[in-house]
Amino acid sequence: MGMLRAQALRCVRVILDIGMHLKLQIPEDAAFYPSESWTPELGLEFIESKSHFPNHFVASEIDRYLGLPGQAISYKVGERVWLETRDSAKKNHGATFDLKGWHTKALSLGGMGLSQMKRELCKI
Image (tube, rainbow, N blue to C red; front, side, top):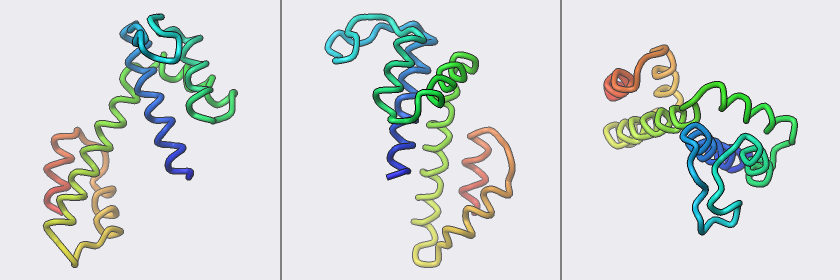
C-alpha cells in the first residue's frame, strides 16, 4: 500500500508541476475547480485531497515544485527508462537474470544522462 500511496503522490506532482509552471487551465470537465488556472493555493488543496499525506508535508511539496520546474516529470521519465532497461535485461538473460545484481551494477554506474544510462544498462 505504501508503494501505491507514493505512486499516487508522484502522479499528483506531475499534474501540479506541469499545471502550475505552464499556468494551465484545469479541464472544464474536471470535478476539481473546472476551468480555473492552477495556482499554488489550488495545488495545495489538490495535493492534500489526492495524496493523503500530512498537510505540513504537502505544503513543502508545493514550495519544492514551484522552485524546481520539471522535477516531477524528470523523475517519471527517468523511472520509465530505468524500468524499460530492466525489463529488457530480464528478457535477455531469462532465468539467469539476477535482480539484485542488476540493480547493484546499475547503481554503481553513478550519475549520467538518460541516453547514456540506457546504453550502459543495456550492457548489464
